[in-house]
Image (cartoon, rainbow, N blue to C red):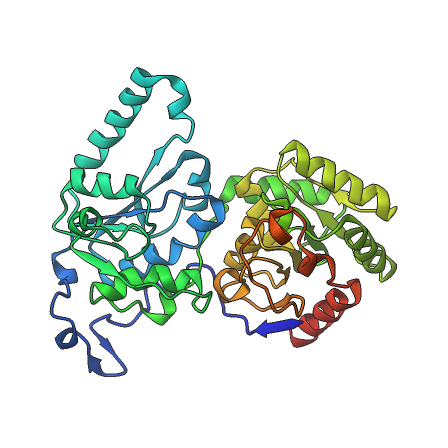
Length: 391
């Protein structure tokens, strides 16, 4: 099954041209929300997203929208250190604070020193607003310690009395994969009475001049021209989200027979390298193998130059959406309505299994997802052709 969505222009577009949040279609929204906050009173705000790379990137429109609403406000973000590249150089960002995932491995006292140093740096900013975009208790404790005038977090599984008292506002979430994660994040602003301007809802990832130059040189080395090659990223952090090796290899053979120049990418993780190497060996066609050789900024710069991105539900798929590269995305157990390519020309290829999206790590937890395994190469080729015909 293939679903489609139109493209939207521009990464980080619209920050300067966004309409006033107090009005939408000429209607003043503030009287309808008694505890709406006044954006004119915001001096500093902190956005907390302590998750994986793709999750952090999907939070980037919150920064853009808040900056459009309150251009005088300094907006900081707090993420895990390994995901910092997802928000670095964001035009709405004042400061980027990070926590180490591995601090707990350093021993109690060293971890405590790192945690206290991070807390001091955050408290020195004296935030008026904290936006916590998950239901993780760490963000709740930080919010209590930072004591902002306003704070907002999702209602969810941790909706206890303690959780409720940690925040001034709680925003409701829609279950069942009926709302995209980006819009769920933006609901934090809506709950505060701050309507996100349409023009500021794009994903935003800035590769940077250094990554652009490095990738330009790399493409020249391989004889590749921007917008004249297809990027294929077959792997995911979670292997139950991956298409089987045989179909991956067959797709490469079909595309190579059509004269396409193919660039394969993947993380430096040993399992992903093995997977990509096995696909290339089985395909037996000429490709440019960049698996494990690019950092996140370089990956974004490469993706921005690709004519088309093909892959599964993964952070690189969200990177493609952020840099405006059309996507063909294969979805199995994860929900495409919740996690699909955001505001970019795309096709989502799925099966017709009535059980999907189940959110399980393979059928019955067996690490193999039949809904992915039964997607044919012909279906993916049809999606590619339909998308490129649209463009």
